[in-house]
Length: 116
Image: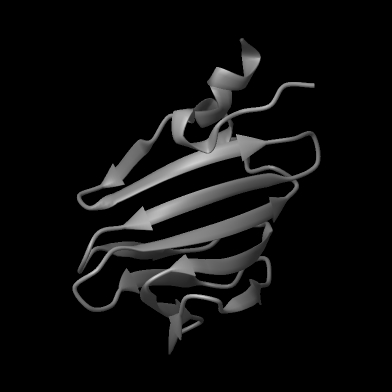
């Protein structure tokens, strides 16, 4: 078993103002997405359940066409196949933890550092 310092996990840019760090296990995966002030994540869907915890800041989540403003400390579940996206609110960054089960195949390349 290996332990990692979160600050050493590679940060991957997704689009201007948005980065992601990913850690995976065999049956679950966690991602922390950091949104700079005013940045957005495009609406998308995936076949995985997503558990969300807003770690820092304020974010508007668009869930199935309905906008939900949430702040640090909020937790919620996004069912598989639900269209969703997010936008940072205000002038500060926000960080959002997402947990998926099973791991998302499209995010596994971000975990190559775990093969060392």
